[in-house]
Image 1 (cartoon, rainbow, N blue to C red):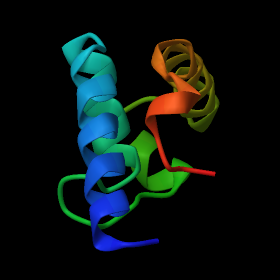
Image 2: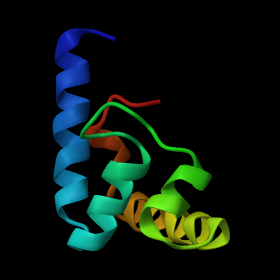
Image 3: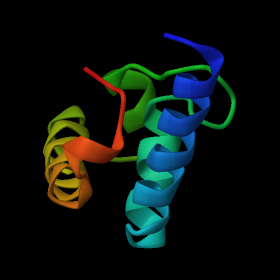
Length: 79
């Protein structure tokens, strides 16, 4: 991918993330390391948020489903 495509994808991702409620956005940014470039495991996420690993997996699935509903595949270069 070109730098331009990656920049467009990041911009599109940020737009989609901003459409989420703040708690969901913070959760995804933390879990996937979108702020610190350090993705966390389910266990590390659970420990940091003081919830169970099962709850991490459930929340992740719920938030990713919300993101999928927001994404227009014609506007992103992601495969």
